[in-house]
Length: 184
Image (cartoon, rainbow, N blue to C red; front, side, top):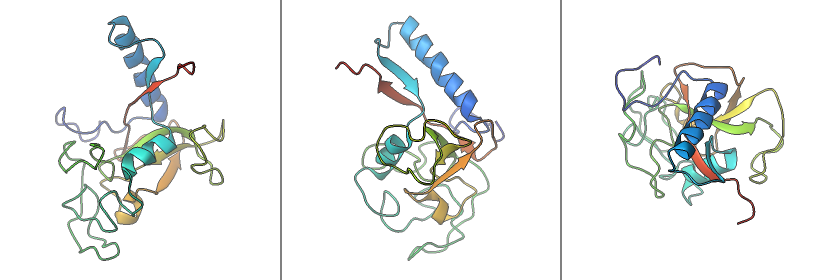
């Protein structure tokens, strides 16, 4: 990690492939320890799952409304958005959970680090359903923006993409627990 200085910082400088390998190892570890039932597994969230978790029932630019400040998230607040006041520029990641969670209890959905999603990127098939569309591609989706980005890039709807081998200090991941047993 680029900014490592303790266990409270977000995971960063990790590729999509490394993030998926972590999810597979975590699933195997938890299955072997008996803490996970068959059909359940850890993975990256799909793009639909990520945005649903971020928005937490809202339809605004951010899950807290149409403005955001450096009191709400870790991002470059020196660039105002809408009616937002100019704030501080961020220069690094900060401890996870430093700001209030959204209405669903999720922390840091805006800023700190971009988060890998399961989906391949497509400009044409955005959030059609929770089915992964397209089934293959050149780039993987990332969501949420980072400490480096201005407010336009940390909006709930903002999406971007990178090669699945790409890694840097603005990019990390969030783990999702899903049930793959379709018979229930």
